Structure formats: structure tokens, C-alpha cells
Length: 451
Image (cartoon, rainbow, N blue to C red):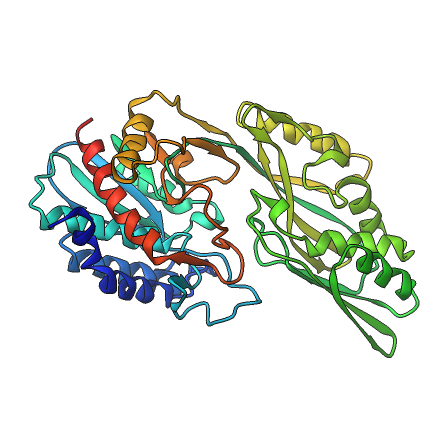
């Protein structure tokens, strides 16, 4: 059977399997006694492990934090590390985000590209290898986590229980491989405000696409507020109710690692409030130190290296008591130190005492491009696609690769392809690319088993 046909014959089953996983709204929610990331999240893991067993893998559930299906034998382990949790669906979908919908050769649904599609492709890669009677010289594990989008505590649990693997990849980024990932910094801005209420954003690592603000009726010049948004082509709606005004500003979601691809409704709301004469401690702080910039330039951290520039995203905002709290997601250039960035930012915010809390500082990741891990995965991509133009890259997004040894991000998106709307409405994956992923992972697993 030809290489193409051995995967093509599984096309409908692959689509059906992906639809089964997409059906779960597996966003991390409040824990219960046996569901550390929420009931639906746990149910999604159980379904994935059931699918592993169906396809010839021995399933293992590690306390509903993370699970894996295993095939092969030996002392060494090759890991294929995907995740089943998702970011919230948000607004603006043309179809139900939890019903896999096919249009124009694309499969739409939350998780199709991040990361359930790649999990399914990896599962069928292992099926293809078994079909062909491949004798696995090492144990190969399809590892499926449940908390990648919110801190990767699931992977920490795996490493505590099972240790590291000899080699592996996480199909959660780009082909033909990502040899470097930026460092990270998470923070909370908290400061007093006379705003009655404000709500915006679905997650810290998503550009806010919708922000609703409630203020007192005579606290701003409504005409100037409108004009500030019209000048920037920002969609909005204003509702007046007795003594209050509701300001509804719409943006465009994007992944926090590429905030330039989105329109941050929080930032445009804050700028418009300032231009409309709304004199407020939080609004003043925001426009002085954040503004419309996504590079941290107003607080002195607009830094870069040969692999890229620092990015800053305000993802979630809400009023709690007398204060407004806003999340900060920063991606730090690979060769720079995240702790140094945290110090610089804290110094900038010191003019507003106690307004900034650093909650997370994460290191960068780097593997030489001539390392055996990177070389073998890039080779697998080229053996299948015959694409020698695309080269391994670095990125601002953080993956599981930072949490376990001997691992890089490899797939499942292809360079120079249209935006698949990861972390945005109408997320999709092309069917042809999903099938091609299967072939690439087949070869990648073989290559890693030979190291």
C-alpha cells in the first residue's frame, strides 16, 4: 500500500475520532475530588484513553491529571506529548465550536489545531506503524495532558510519576520544528478605579476581543469616546440607562504570543476613556504604562534579540471590590533573562505603589539545530514532504517542551499557511494537513526510535 493510501484509508475514521474529542468543552474549571481540572476535562481524558485502547495502545491514567497510551517494549521511552485542554470558545463562531463542522476542506471546532487534531494524528500514526508490523525497539507513549493552557501542572505530575523520556516531541506548534521558545512572565495589575464594573477577555494567553465597561452617566464625554474608537476603526456600542453608561468595545482575538495579530478591546477601551476625559487612577496607570503597545515600550521593557522581540498582552480584566485587576502575559526573548524583565517592569510600576504583582517567571528553551533531536525531526519532515525550504524556527508561544527533558515542539501547523485561528473564533484544521501530519509523525517516531 502506498504511503499516501495507508493514511487516506483512515480519513473518515480520523475525522470521526477528532469530532469525538472536539465535542468536549475541556476548558480547565474548578477541581473536584477526582477531577483536578473539572469534570468535562476528566471525561475528555477518559475518552482519549478509550480511543488509545481501541487503537492497540495500553492506556494509563495518572490521577486524571494526564494519561498516556503505550506501545512497544524496552527500557527507553519515546514521548509524543499533546494536550486535550482548550482555551474558552469565546464569541464570533460561525458554527458550534463543539460540533466538528466541515466546510471547504476544513474542519472547524475548538481544539482542532490546538491540540486535539495533533493528538488524533499522533494516535493514527501509531496505528499505521502497527498495521505495518513495525517492531518498536523502544516504548512509545502518546501522552495527553489536561492543563497545558493554564500552567502545565499536568506535565509536572507526569514527570513526578514517570520521569523524563529519552527523546520526544510535542505536536503543538510548527513544522519542521521549534528549537527555541521564549521565556515567560505572568503578572497582575491591580489598582483603584471609579469604574462601576468592567469585564473583558477569556484567558491571559488570548488577546481580549470583547470588553464591557460600566461608568457613571456624566463621568466622560461620550462623543469624544466614540470619536477615539471611530478613528481607529474599532467596533463598539454604547447604551445609556438612567444614571449609567455601558461601553461595549469589540476587538479581535489572537494568541498572546502574537498580539499583533489581534485587536485588544481592553487597550482601546482604556485609550478611549482617557481621550474622553475619564479621570481615573487605573485608566491613568494603563495609558501611561501599557497603552496600545504590545511590546512593553511604555514601561521600558521593549527588548529583543536575534530570535525575536518581547511581546506583552493584557488578556483578562475585571472589577473586584474597589480595584480593577488585569492579567499580563509577557513572552521574553530567548537569550534574555525573565527575572531581569520582571525587575525592570516592577521598577516602572513603582510610581503606582503596590499596583503590580509578578505571579510567574519562566525560563526560555533552546536546542542547537545540529542536536540529534532537532536533526532527526527535521529529517522526518523533509523525508515525507520533500520541503527543503522551510527551516526550524523559534517562537513566542510556550509548549510542554519546557517542562520535560529532550523535547521540542514539532508540528502540527505548516509554515506559510493561512492563520488557523488558534485561540480565536472559527479555529480549524485543513483535512489534507491533518492527514499529512499523520505521515510525518510516522516517520518522526521511526527516526526517534533509531537514536
